[in-house]
Amino acid sequence: MKAMDMRDAKHSKPTSRLASTRERIDRSAYELFSRHGIRSVGVDTVSARSGVAKMTLYKHYPSKSALALAFLRRREELWTRSWLQQEVERRARTPAGRLLAAFDVFDQWFRRPNFEGCSFIKALLEHSDKGHPVRKAAKANLATIRAFLRQLAKEGGVRGADAFARQWQMVMMGSIVAASAGDKDAARRGKEMGLLLLAREGIA
Amino acid sequence: MKAMDMRDAKHSKPTSRLASTRERIDRSAYELFSRHGIRSVGVDTVSARSGVAKMTLYKHYPSKSALALAFLRRREELWTRSWLQQEVERRARTPAGRLLAAFDVFDQWFRRPNFEGCSFIKALLEHSDKGHPVRKAAKANLATIRAFLRQLAKEGGVRGADAFARQWQMVMMGSIVAASAGDKDAARRGKEMGLLLLAREGIA
DNA sequence: GCATGACTAGACAGACCTGTACAGATAATC
DNA sequence: GATTATCTGTACAGGTCTGTCTAGTCATGC
Image (cartoon, rainbow over the protein chains, first blue to last red):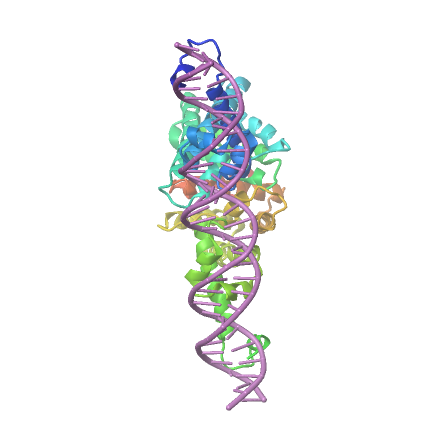
C-alpha cells in the first residue's frame, strides 16, 4: 500500500496504518509539548509515549523542528480554532459579548487541575533567536488570534480595530501569565478590564 | 589571603581577587541568562564568557541551579529595585503618577535594540514542574513586584489594593509579552489601560 | 623561602540529545 | 505465496550538558 493511496478516500479503510501512526505521533507530541514546552521534551520521549519507533517518527518528520512546527499547527487547530473560537461563538452572539466570553472560556481553562498554559507564548519565549522557525511560527499563531479579535472588534464598530485587538490580546496574555503564576482568578480580572475597554468604545 | 579577610573591609584592596571573580561570574551569568533564558545557556558558556575556569565557578556555586537562583536574586536587585522602582519613583511623585510611570519606563525598555524581555516570566514558563526551585523563585520575584504595586495602590487610596495590583501587573506582563512578540507600542497600549483602571478608582 | 589558598587549563565521566543504520517483523496487495 | 512498503527494536555516532578530577600557576602572608 502506498502512502498516497491512503489519503485518496476511495479505499475502504479510513484509518490506515500510516494515518494512525502519524496521528499517534501527533497526539503524543501535542500532550508533551503543550504541557512541558518544546525544548524540555526529547524525541525519545515522544517516541516512547506514542509507542512509535523513533525511526518511524523520523520517517514522518525529518527533524524535531518539523515536529515542533506541526505541533504548533495542531495547537492552532485544536486550541485556537476548535476550542477558543468555537466556545466564544457558542457562548455569545454580539461582538462585545464574544470578546468578553473569551475570558469566561479562560476562567474554566485556568481552573482545570492540569492547566498547561499558552503554548504560543511559551514557544515564543523559549527561543531568543528572532530568526528561529519555531519562534516565527509562534508569533504567527498569536497573530491569528489577534486577527480573530480584530474581526470581532470591527463587527462591533470599534474605530481602530487593530489597536483595540492588540490591547485586548495583551489583557488575555497577561491573564494567562498570571494564571501560570498561580492566580486562579486571572480570567475574572481580565474580564473586568475588558469591560473597561468596551465601555471606552461605547459598545457595552 | 583567606576568604574571610576579603570581606572584612579592614584591608587595603577593595576589589580582592575572590570578589572580582565572583562578580565576573555573576555579571556574565546575568548577561547570558537575561538574554537567552536559563535553560538555553550552559555552564561552559558562562565560564567562557566570564573568563573564569569552570572549577572556580563550581567553587562559588555548587550547581547550575544555585547559579540560576543567584541570577534571579541579582535580577531583582538590578532590574526590579535599582531600575524599575527607582525610575518610577524618580519620574513621578503621586501614587497614580508612579503607577503610570511604570509604562513610560517600559516604553524606553521596549524600544531598546537589545530588549531582552522579562527574566521572571521566562524562568516561570521554562519549568513546568511546580516544585522546581527556579520556578518558585521566579514566582516570588513576580510577587515582589506586585507588592510594590500594591503599596502604591494603597498610598493612592485604592480599595482592594491587592486585586488592583494584580490587575495592574497583568497589564504590565501582557505588555511585556506583546513587546517580546514585536509590538514596540505595547507600553503605550498598557498605559492607556492603566488610565482606565485609575479612572475606575477615581484617582486620576 | 615557604606554606596556603584561590584560580586555571584541560581532560573526563555519565547522562541526555538529535539523527542514523540495520536486520527483522508485519500486513496489504498482486 | 511472493512482493512491497511500513513499522519495530536496538544499537550507535556525534554532540551537548552538568559536574568532577588533576596537575600546576600565581599571589599573598608568615
